[in-house]
Length: 89
Image (cartoon, rainbow, N blue to C red; front, side, top):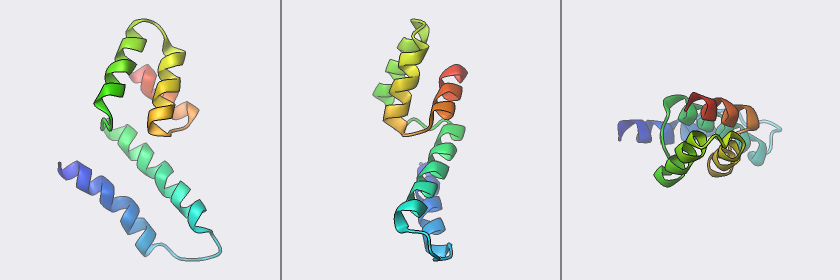
């Protein structure tokens, strides 16, 4: 549970304490989301247990491409991050 609150605090702290410049809020939010997804992936936090079970089934069945697509859709990470995650399973 502590990890969850820590993960919620990081983007909030980043937004509050970062310098405001010419960057739009959307660009800043995209950067924060990318960093948060990297942290979640690194820690192995499961955001949706049902999706995780589907991922394991796809990997066991040898359907790696479908597993990568499912993980990208559910987590919003990029192709490389999704591929690395699925291969780690």
